Every structure is written in C-alpha cells, then in structure tokens.
Length: 370
Ligand SMILES: NC(=O)c1ccc[n+]([C@@H]2O[C@H](COP(=O)([O-])OP(=O)(O)OC[C@H]3O[C@@H](n4cnc5c(N)ncnc54)[C@H](OP(=O)(O)O)[C@@H]3O)[C@@H](O)[C@H]2O)c1
Image 1 (cartoon, rainbow, N blue to C red):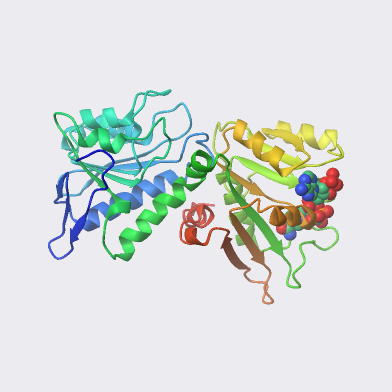
Image 2 (cartoon, rainbow, N blue to C red):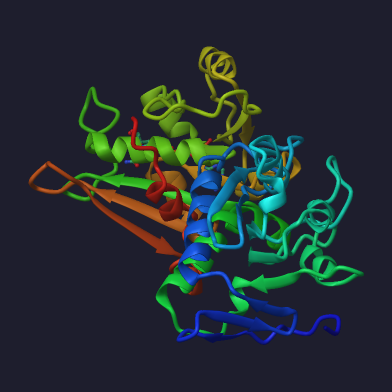
C-alpha cells in the first residue's frame, strides 16, 4: 500500500467478508461489532482519568470471533489499552489464540512513557487489526501504517473507511469518535472539549428557590455527577461560588481512584474567592485557580493537559460563554410539570458532530450499580 493512500474497503455483506488492499477478514461481523462494544464500554469508565492521554479500549478475539480479553488505558503513565489486553490474554493462557485486535483509537507508533503499542501488536499473533479512529497526534500516529508494513504485515482495517451503509458500523465509529473527541480536540484544536451544563426550572430560570442549590430530579443529578467524573476540569463563576458554596465533588458515582487532582477554575475578576472555600476544595483534591478571562482559562487548561472541561455556572458567566463561543456542547436539563423526570437536550456547536457527543456517550455508559 502506498503511503498516505486511503484504503478502499468494500464490504460484501452477503458473504460476511471485508476486503481491503491489506487483505480480507473472515471474522463474523457480529463478533467484530461485539468486540468493539466491549472495548468502548471498558474505556468509557476511564473518561476523566487518562488526560493528557486519551481514553482507549481494546478487545482481542480468536479466529472464530470469541472474546479473549478486553482492556482499557487506566491513566497517563500506565500501560496502554492494547498492552493491558495483551497482558490479560497472556495471564489467562490465551495469548497464542489471539487472531484479531480491535482498538478504539489507532495504536501509537512512538516511544513515549511506554513503548509503542503498534510494536507490541506486531510481535503478537494478531493477524487482523481493527482501528476505530485515526490518531492525529503527530508524535504518536502511524501505528496502522507500521502494522501493515514489514516482513510480517498485518491486515489493518479502519472503521472510518468502511464504505458501507450500515447503522451498526456507523454508530460504532461515532462512539469511537465520541470517546476520543476530547483528546482529539486538544491535539487538533489546541484546546479542550468544553461541555456546558445548564439546569432550568419549569419557568426557564437557572436560579433555584431560596434555600436550595438544585431543583432537578435525582436521575439528572446522577447524570451531572457522571459528567463531573468524566472531565478533567470544572469552570464556574464567582457568583455561583458565593451563592451556593458548591463542593463540585463527584458524589452520586464513585470517582476515579487515585486520579490526579481535577482543575477547578473560578471566573472572578475581583479576587473574591473565599479562602475557606478554596482550602476546602483543595482538601477535596482540586487545584483551584482564578481567572479573569476565558482565554486565560483556556491557556491554563492547555498547560495542564486537560482533554475535557465542563462549565457549571450561573447566567452571567454562561452569557459570556455563549458570546465568546467558548463551548462545544451545551446540555440543558429542564424541569417538567410532572416532576418525575426532566427534559434533557444536548446541542452541538458544530452540527457535523451531532452523533459524536462525548457527553451522551458517557451518560450511555453510566454504571448501573449506583
Ligand atoms: N441552573 C444552573 O444550571 C446553575 C448552575 C450554576 C449556578 N446557578 C445559579 O446561578 C446563580 C449565580 O449566577 P451568577 O450569574 O450570579 O454567577 P456566575 O455566572 O456563576 O458568575 C458570574 C461571574 O463570573 C464572572 N464572569 C462572567 N463572565 C466573565 C468573563 N467573560 N470573564 C471573566 N469573568 C467572568 C464575573 O465575575 P466578576 O464579577 O469578578 O467580573 C461574574 O460576576 C446562583 O443562584 C446559582 O445557584 C445555576
């Protein structure tokens, strides 16, 4: 295959074969789809724990499509998803049976804190490598190419290049994109992915009744905590800090164990952050910083390697956020007359990313045991 050439993939659905210039797959479609779903599920749990690295999942299959091992990259500095899965297969005595590796993001090809995953996959018995999303990181990309070259080339399949109208394949690719999008945004746009969370009363107000700090249902509250768990930074306004004395901790889900401190940015132009509140948040494992402009907050997050940030603030800051287009997805949780459930709406600033919302992906993969 010539460098840079896009692989033309044709799927013969009737025969269940995938053919590329690098070879053909004989695995049943359902096995590949199932493997990707397991890899995505495993990786979803790591959102908020891996920055500046991406959340990635990997599933290993035997030649009949049976799952041998599933792994995810738990945090920066720890082994990557492919290595976790390969090691699990080895420990279970299944290493020699590996026929295919399905990875949500292209395996890296560079020596960083860990050796390149592409190299480890090349050494493995895997014949087919299925990749969800290409890695745009110039320092790490090229794993797919590396694997399809050399003395013992692997068959490499990119989900995004499957030329087929099939809702399942499309939604798997979109889920791989949604999982990687916070990381992809940081690498490609040099800024984090930003999600705004805005709760509205039945009357459309953001302000809770006196004596309350929230008014949404418990189900919405759990989802909001799921979002907090998935992000690397929270941005709020001084108005909210002074009105609500918020803790911003993750309480309705178990937070990541041993994660590095989350960044908590307070938009505050007059130095009004209460010392006691700041000290308490630092005790809660936050790095608290004040900023007087959104651009300053962005620079701070870039320096800290933040992939995904959320904004939890009142109407004054949200007005600035809207005016300065400082957001990627906007989540509105609106109270309903029945009071049993809220209406949840997610708007994407870039309409092309409609089905690739990291927020919706994360909420779909919420753990059921909370
Ligand atoms: N329903 C919800 O989703 C929700 C969420 C959070 C809070 N709330 C409620 O919102 C209320 C507080 O709202 P609020 O509007 O007073 O406070 P806020 O929006 O949380 O904070 C406002 C402050 O943010 C700073 N700010 C705004 N734009 C900025 C910019 N472009 N650059 C730098 N700083 C900027 C300003 O600080 P300076 O004054 O220093 O200029 C401003 O006073 C509370 O009642 C709280 O319960 C509701």
